[in-house]
Amino acid sequence: MGMATRIYGCITELDYGLPNSEIQNRINAHNKDIIEKLPSKSEWPPLVRKMFSITDNSDFPNESPNFAYGGRIIHFGANLKSVEYEWNEWKEKFENLLSELIWSHAEVHFVTEYTGVQTFEWRIKFGEVDREKDIEIVKPFNRKLWEYKGDKSWDK
Image (cartoon, rainbow, N blue to C red; front, side, top):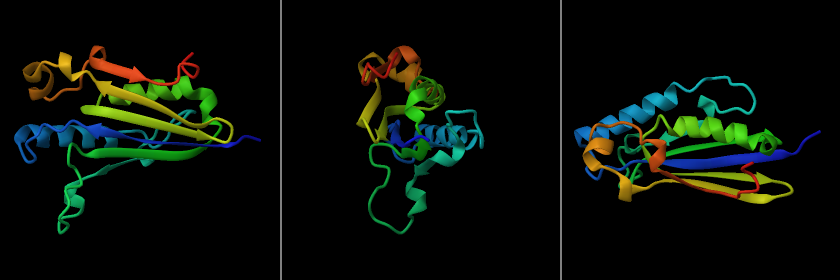
């Protein structure tokens, strides 16, 4: 018998700063396509399409708040059985997904019955980003531009 482990978080899509610009529309379309192409089934630990959703202003056409201020949110979550034992395998799958998306910040939270909340974060090091080469051609950021922060005892 195992214990439930809640895994949830969000990926903040890169906000180019011009809401309906050609570049922002290409970023949005690229990320939507990547999320939609996630598998419906996966080997353990799972990282599958049904875990993910994207909040988009077009989902709320008559609402006044901007639901994508600073970038759309790609949110995810699942309640799984003792997945923390496969953290490194799940993290690898998650980072492979990040390597395909165009994003600025990502957070993953694990909640277990015996460890409480564990938080892991990835950020793009924008001080090292070449705006023309790394953003305007609309492609994912090279892993060398990522910064990772998490509980080192989980990263073996």
